[in-house]
Image (cartoon, rainbow, N blue to C red; front, side):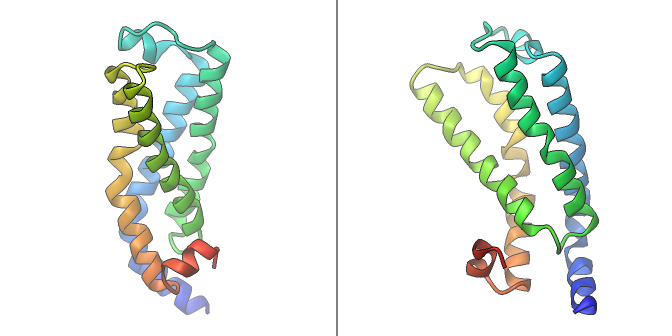
Length: 146
């Protein structure tokens, strides 16, 4: 079992740089938004749509993914479910953004955060999940938490 895990980690090692980068990105983005909650809105010339504390909560949610991505980078085969959860967030974020733009609740300029928080990571996260599904019993097993 240990050899199989080690072999799988070697096969998945190509995703390590992506997950380390995601960990660092989430640490920085989350920290900046917790400490300076209106910075992004000011940069895109948008009025502050919510109280600072609510945007700081968003920053905190992003921030807590940093250790998950770090763990996945260290041991790619062990933490596939953390990446699956992260990928779901990266799918749902853009869906929510499109809905908000369509209902005139957010300006299109807000999409810069969708590009860097979500869309940038789609290829690596999807390919990693595809590969882990192949190595660990298929998509059904992955979704069942196996």
